[in-house]
Amino acid sequence: MMMNEISTATALGKTGAPANSWKAPRIEMLRRGFPLIFLVVLVAVFTAMSPRFLSLDNLSTVLEQGTVLLVAALGMTFIIMAGSIDISVGAIVAVSALVAAMTATKLGVWAIVPAIAVGALCGCLNGLLLSVGKVPSFIATMGTMVVYRGLVLYFTRGAPVSIDNDGFLDAYSGITYGIPHEVVIGLVLAAVAWAIINYTVFGREVRAIGGGERVSILTGIPVTRVKILMYVLLGALCGMAGLLQGARTMAATSQLGLGLELDVIAAVVVGGTPLTGGLGSITSTMLGVLIITLLSSGMNMGGVDPYFQNIIKGIVLVTAVFITIDRKKIGIIK
Image 1: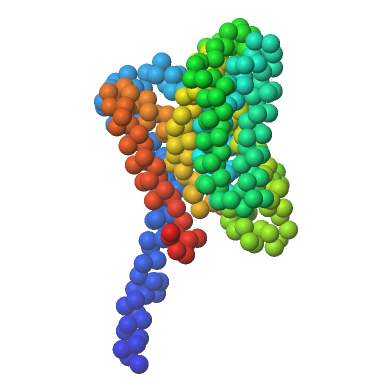
Image 2: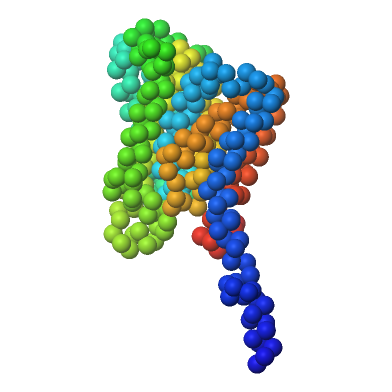
């Protein structure tokens, strides 16, 4: 009896709590604080490498470069919060940019309508494959990524489609009082996405599905409809991102958006939204976008080999997943 009491006391420690109980709060603090810590380290390292890194000109360029990534990442936040994934975002951006380029001459500013419509249609197809066809999101979007990219190659034949409508270019890539229009558009969309997540039934349903899909079904949440809608939303936002990218480069190319899916997923995950779903916020995604954009800008200014930059981004993504993933929600890692 005495030995049992001694063993119990040893296991619990002097305070009567489990010996490892202090680890959980510290791990949670690290998980939540990782994006901000990483951002501070990033700024310190790149500032030491290049004093021009924190110049106003460079920060303005970073904001412009990060807008397309931000707009696409806003939609991806909903997808990852629900516990799914979409790797076709770069291809949807390319398709939407192509549609915008092909219609800008006649429609001008209103080319935004077909661009977003095509993006939403692509997203709807992804959602149907996932929710109705029961195809895993990774496989479904990998297949559609190839299809969408193939459509761009088919219609462009590898040649760029120029955008020369002044009204279109002024509206989506112009500058007013020193503020780029695309940055304003990105911030407005971020505010709308934030409101949807925090103040609508749809936002709560997305979060609930990520927390537990079977429980969500039992509580009466229309899971199939919600999944389709969140993919449509992502597609529409990718349509807007393609429009902005096309306006910025004044052309749509077959290579536009290539590799964007890695940056989008990295931005959402690095910002603190775990791939296990159920958690996440727009503000954390915005922080993740800033980190990824500063990372790219800093590596370019620091003279890092372009072929080595993707390796670094991959390491950052894996590190972020390792730190932010909630292992309690996963019984077996496959």
